[in-house]
Image (tube, rainbow, N blue to C red):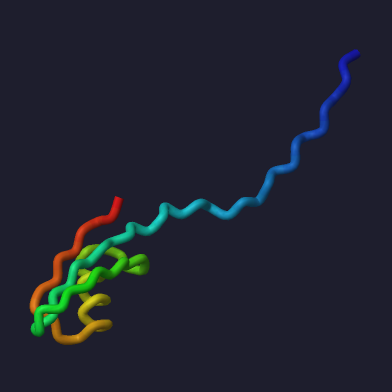
Length: 68
């Protein structure tokens, strides 16, 4: 006669989400100053651009890249 095992309890772990991408933005202001921003709460490049522009206001140029 063989011993029976109890069924292992299943752990209710929440489904893992893929980490959101992180972006870096280089800003140049009209007066020549420049700055770098790290964007963590953006869904895509367009969203990252909108977040930066809404945060800093008037800019001469914005360059955004995916941060590795």
